[in-house]
Image (cartoon, rainbow over all chains, first blue to last red; front, side, top):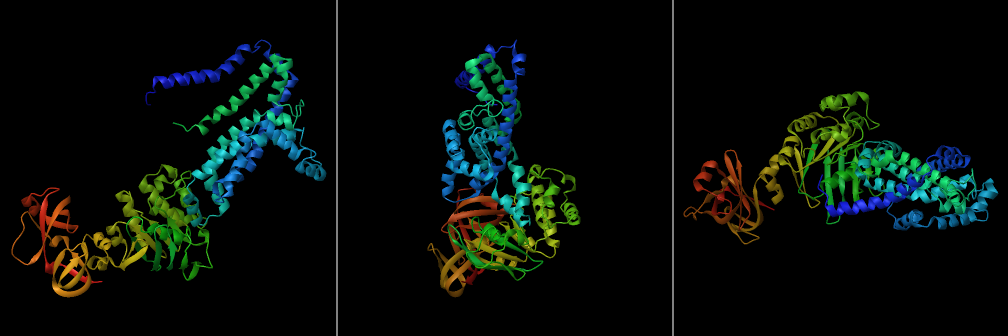
Length: 259
Length: 337
């Protein structure tokens, strides 16, 4: 390895300390003695299980819809693709509250799609668990699309064309050639978007509300507890941190190219 | 049997090709870089579409204004220049990838191309020679009518080269088109060479025909000859740079003059006497080829001289030296264009 200049090491150290300080602050204030009791409480358990359900459901939906979107964005040459890409990636930069508001206007009882869903299927999204999943999908799908689209682009098209000349069907080529080659990026994209879904707050509270057991995921529970029971907020935060690390650490090699 | 007669507009020129390859025949396509060789393979494989004309395999039209048969249904085995192996699959999985492949043939090919010991190795970990053998086996396993090989011997070890050449010589039932820039390879594998320059076929012939009467400077350079286009008037021909060459037979009009490198003698001082062509030139490069020394000369004409080691030592030549090159009029081969 090359020797890293001292100035760089210094700046990096400051940045790392900055990034770690909130974590240290949190751990320092953590009510370690009463933690077992707190963690056993219904509120925390419910929020934890709901968060897992919502984030994994969102990841599943993201996986199912994200791959075709990424494929189309990577392989189409139409000029409006650039515009389409910006629209698809918009939730990445949009304040989540704006996203939640927009979702409400689309899928709310009076929204142009929500009305239709309600009349035809009796399906209501706002202020339901399904609504939390929709909000989580909305904010997290761009992370998956970005990762998978660039993976699709990085495949040499001659590879797939060679497979064509060998007489392989397009589904065989996708399953046996394309998919295995982008698999690491799919995992990375899933981990990133899952993490984003787990931490989702703004769009969820706007679109799905904050109902314990139904839409009160960990971040929402933390927000509420902070005003009434700070110790509970700390315990909830710890649960989130541990959950995130448990999922993200195994995937760290996927978005950091291994040496 | 493959018949191609058509054109394709490319960025810098239009590719115009007319060629025919029979079953059991191997034809070599030679040409400088960027002449459109690989593009011809892509046209046949269905990776590119003809602008005009048509392409037939066994009398079935597979590309014309009206028809375009998808690569999947063409029965064309394409071995691209960088092999395009499926790196994440094993050698065996690569070879049996085609739905047209049969277990029996796959194992025969593995044996024929000496891949038994690496059949379970990931294709991504194969050496250059191994990769090329896998790529060719994979294409053959798809039971093609036409086999397209794009520079198959580039960066190949001698063993792999021999295995591949051996196969190409015994194969049956396939029309093979092989792109190469190596004239020795072309001559050893094929009785018919096609020379392609800037998208146009400039010569078709046996290796011998190309050696005795190259049609262009490129053809001549392939067989190591000096090639000079000139305008002849009787016993004198003038090149486009104004150099006068003395001929042994009277001829009129535009001619191609071939100067065999071995017919050129080099001198430190301007030779006097016998009626021959004498030109001053500077030594650009010196190549030692066993008994002989090949010298690239630059001056009024660019050409190659081949002299014996003995002569080379006596003359004490070095890169950058100025020498006199002389050759007899009777040694020149002159053909009308």
